[in-house]
Amino acid sequence: MKKSLIIIIGGLVILGLTGCSFVKSKRDKASPAELEITEDAVYGAYLSAELKKFRLENHGETCLFAVRQLTIENEITMEKVKLNYFGKKADFRTWLTKIGDRLLKKSISLDRLVKKSMISDFLVRNKKSRIIDEDLPTEAKYFIFRTAEELKLQNRKNPRTGEISFWYNFNQKYPLAAKTGVYSFSCSGFNDKMDQALILVSSSQGLIGEGKVVVFVRKKRIWIIKNVANAYSSCGHFA
View 1: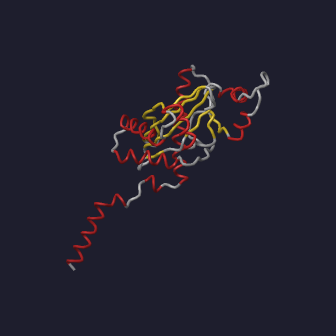
View 2: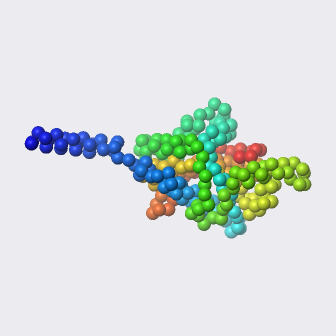
């Protein structure tokens, strides 16, 4: 009896010491739908921050944000980063790890395993695109810029010049979005507790485009931007 009791207690101690490897994190327990709802809250928080910045810079002027229907695909992002930030030989994983590590070291007190976990989650979740819906929780006025509509505007000619002009067509159809342009979001990389998030945001306005890596923290169910790092910039082509 004593021997059996010792074996049971010993087993419980071992499980207690190694239990972290068997217990799923909040992120791992979340369903795909739950992940997307949380992700939408991150997108909404970013748009709210952009609205606040726009109002300050434009004396409270009204604006509209265009959000691309599909999230940024890993392959597209990689090409932009290679050409505009690190050159043709750049590796997307290396680039993201450098940017992510720099941001996380500066903004959040995390150990190395958690940082790697967040970046790894980002890379896994961005292997394919997802569709962004109409229900982003934000005070900013926005619309989902559907892929089919974008293709139509890309192929329509400017009646004045006879040349194909996406931005002329876009500004004519969406004048309130002319100053804000088009935004694209990556999928989010979450930490284990899902109270920190890492996303890549691409925005383009006219012939100027840029990408930013943004770190969020959640406090009392509200996502707050903790830090931002410029990832790449482009000029002269459709971003």
